[in-house]
Image 1 (cartoon, helix red, strand yellow):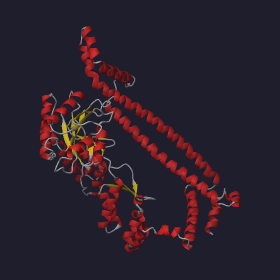
Image 2 (cartoon, helix red, strand yellow):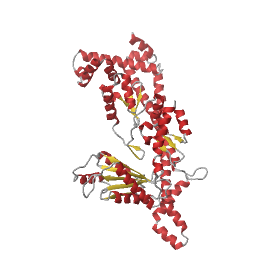
Image 3 (tube, rainbow, N blue to C red):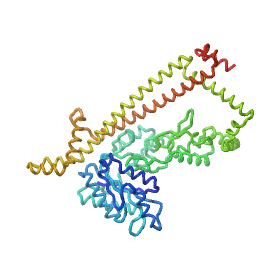
Image 4 (cartoon, helix red, strand yellow):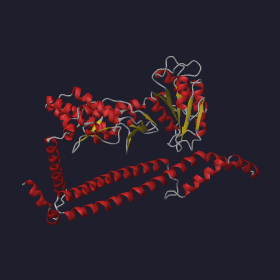
Length: 529
């Protein structure tokens, strides 16, 4: 059952990134499962451009990315999948350069084909639309039937649409997320929750990740839709396999803020606009946003002083003052004042010194540190915690590498098991010796894989499953990310305490250092007076 889709490639950087991705060593068994037609795998983008230079109408697409995924239940080897992919291109795009790679890193074998958007004979561009996609899928189905593989029947193609309809119905009828899950179960869906949300009905063989239905169907946005009762615009994720194409999140955020400021009439409306564009908001010391496809929050002031939280609020509360301040920032007036040899400079430096002193005392009070000795003990405690976190991260890295090596051995086991099975069927010794000489590499790789798997068997004696290993790797990586996040906070605290320690020592006189290191509260009292 081969599922086929085609994705346009519009920029050279995206093309280079895509070609590097599909030729990954771990995914292609050390680059064995890679082939190309009328181009090499090292300078593909340049050779594509050479052919495109002859085209009169090139279009916006510089290449097309074809994905052909085979069912895990089909008895197909990676070499056969590669052969079917080449035959598909020979029949459907016979005059186009392409690079093809067969990936074996998932639970199913699949092909990635990157072909030039312009053919080599007439220099005509590919017209990719729903009609051409149907023809491509029909040709892929014909190849599957010829090779004894299953195909997607028409009723199976509607499973995703039925899932979307049932989810929409559940969202409208349920008051909270737990009721939503119960409703979906009552409709005959099996549910799997983890990093993502999955559903499977009684007619399906595989779970469907709701992310693949669009941004409106992620778990976060489903909860938002249920709570708010409002619809969210559904947009497709740009993916190949499950890897999100990395884009400039900072530029995207700056653009969305600019658009929000054009339409919003209040600060609350501004925030609602960002939410409608699939941004999560973090309040606190710094206002920050994160797109649902991103990994980290972006502080607004990092986009420029004119995007800081105070400036955005000022725009709604006092627009004239906002314009005046914005012009002040852009023209670098602050810098001019600091650099000018006037009374402004002395006042500015004096106010900055006072702010530093107050910030030191406020930090100590906030963290319950009442003496200089307590500050030293706090630094030592934080450094010990940092060492523990570093050791834990190292141990998790070792575990992840072990799981990945087992996963690689498991892929090789399934890939080369047919050779070993064929060897066992041979009964005469001369034929066995001949078979070994012809397939020594395959049999050696099978034996190496079995050696690793035998050392990694489960308690019941079975070999580990790829699904279990991927879940364990994902769990360890999540645990590692959490420890790294906590460790980063510890490092920030250490840096803050060290700075506070140095600043506190510098602002105390020798007399104060002797009398007041153990009574910083008295120093605060003297400042207030």
